[in-house]
Image (cartoon, rainbow over all chains, first blue to last red; front, side, top):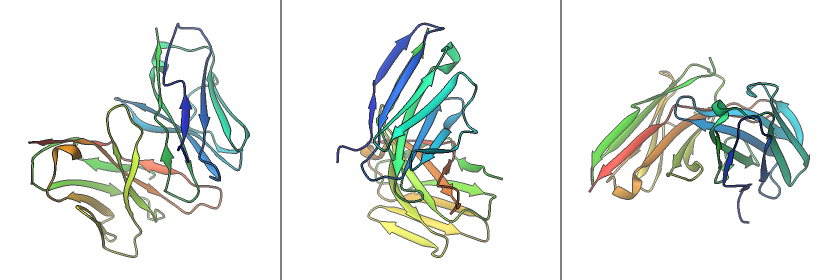
Length: 112
Length: 114
């Protein structure tokens, strides 16, 4: 398996634009997580899914953020409209059981 | 109560030395304690993990020590190598019927000097 695949690896966008981050989890994994990493706040869990169903989205910072998982092999995290303070590295991770989360390479988002 | 406190924030060790990173937690429902290693430009990768029914787990040069009564656990890296230079995160999770989630510590940036 190629692991968790995220795209794009880097994204630079202007403030106010819509940004869509994509993730393909490891096949067979039941859980999918979206994390955000910044120097100030470390690794923050934004939302996670179990069997494609959102379980906990309490970490989503604002209504500007939304996440979907239309099927077991694909998820998106959308920011609309984007703001400079959204600049961070966004990680997608998947797992089969508690704790053994496998992370993707991340998407480095820069909002100017 | 969901927090995991990690220290130190940064650590510099000489090659061949022992690196020690500590974590403390409050939530007694936590029952799985993994450590993740992250290199620049990469995602965190699972390094080693422990459950509270054992006090120590060793995998190669990496050892987790767990103190359930003190609600503390630590990562020891023996014979530290320059290639171990990375950011290390401790984490904790519970067996929740509603799902599976990790709470991460703040991270420790380890530098091993040659």
